[in-house]
Length: 119
Image (tube, rainbow, N blue to C red; front, side, top):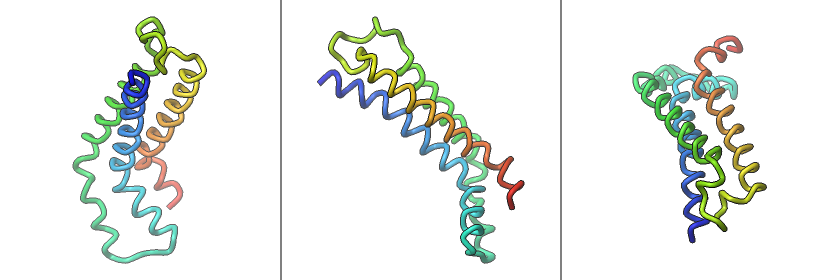
């Protein structure tokens, strides 16, 4: 049971970080995706309703990914023997997933700066 608890504790901040990054970028990525698909209209201008909360979501992304990084890079001797975090192959896989999630979050959070280059 301890292995499952450790797995949930590591997966939760990564999933939360990606979700928060997605919500933080909705004000810019949403209209860009719709326009790229050929969907347009005056109502697309109303999709910026989450813009005032963007800094809050970015802080949430940073906190959750920081927590996830601490979970996957903490020393092995802090793990209980026989738990998932003590297995080297699992640690490597989790570290790889962490960096993929961090890169995806970075792309989403910085989307307001690079999306105008393509529009």
